[in-house]
Length: 269
Image (cartoon, rainbow, N blue to C red; front, side, top):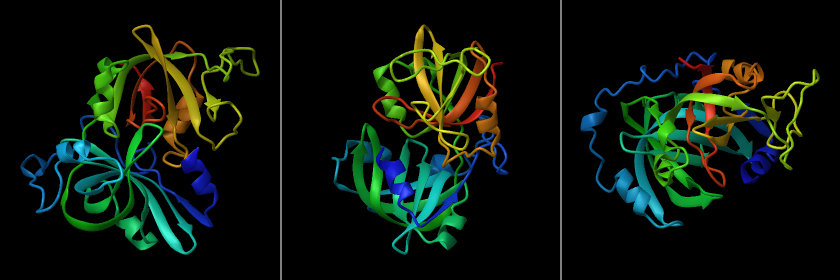
């Protein structure tokens, strides 16, 4: 995968865990702050989300959005690069490998408002902004998780791409290998997760797990660069059992289909 390969080339990698249960951030759907954002007007020359969504791939885009979570910071050939999830009241933007000093990266706490100029790109279905520059500007907004459970399997789900979302009342299904065979654990029970998409990893790698609703099954993951193996969500997924009913929150990432980056897992209400 492009993103994984790039990260392994780095000379230095600093993990960021925002909203993952033990980072001092919160992720509950009732805890977002909308202060001032409803009246937020884009600066001159800045696109609305609708204009951004309509823009052609590889075209220059200028957006204003608010940091919701930071995935990682690393250094390549002396240049710091960061990956950030951002959102405004209308939509969300994934900022990939944006040049950024470590000093500025530390300032990108949830709610921070950014003006970003870059190029709209797409990779395996994921729409992102690359080759970007940014400045921190006045304003603050933390999004509430939008329940998109009913949109799973629907064409309209992609319109929520990169947003902070929730999934309610989903059932944990057995993990399967790339050939579709059910994986069992050391006790012979059906395994509820895999390290990496194909089970080739180990503790500290991405966690993949299957969940279902309304008769359809989906693959979700805990992205280890966003929420590493010291976080509550990582531990929660490792403790899942097939058949558990769970509620989740995360960012609606896309990789050849819906592939949410989950930051919170709890027993279903």
